Image (cartoon, rainbow, N blue to C red):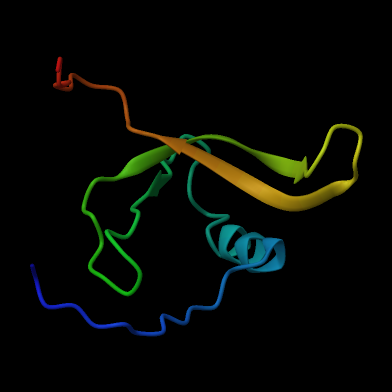
Length: 87
């Protein structure tokens, strides 16, 4: 069994305003400029290095008919050829 320790990971989650400011700073970039997301391997760890692309974004609510309670960006692996386990 590997040695392990418990630690508290703290991070400031971005708000929609933070995202809007970042997009505003990129206004000079062309509309077809790619957007990728690089997820972390684990809290406080290195980046996984596997970039993902955004496939949708928008306000979402907790239950049907409810007011949105967060803005969600959904990601997927980019187009390409991948291997998959069969067992």
